[in-house]
Image 1 (cartoon, rainbow, N blue to C red):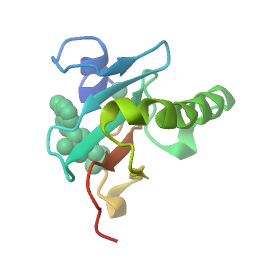
Image 2 (tube, rainbow, N blue to C red):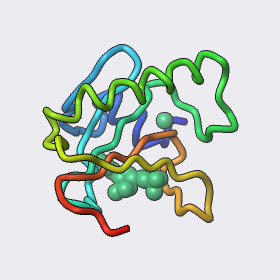
Image 3 (cartoon, helix red, strand yellow):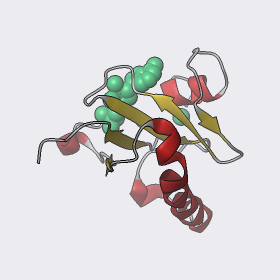
Image 4 (cartoon, protein in one colour):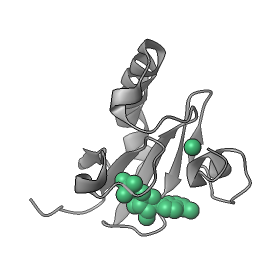
Length: 110
Ligand code: AMP
Ligand code: ZN
């Protein structure tokens, strides 16, 4: 867990502008954007995979998803957005701290 990039960003060890933060999640810009706007919503609690969630994590993730539409207008996503959670090698997951990709700001390829 000490080597986890997102834990280090959470703790301020790796600098990254937090566009939104509350007690459960924070939002940063993806360093390699795959769309005009590409954000990551990252739960503060470190866990790797959806399959590792506790009941508390499930409730937190549900609240996290519900926050996205309230944040969207302030992030330039008034016209819609795409949410992606990569799980495991076949999905190309590279950071093993669960995070939600939020992409938009332009028409996304289907
Ligand atoms: P995933 O492939 O789903 O695990 O996504 C990991 C994402 O984290 C990738 O889109 C990376 O570009 C992004 N990423 C890695 N390091 C950083 C960082 N220091 N700041 C912001 N985004 C990052
Ligand atoms: Zn972590």
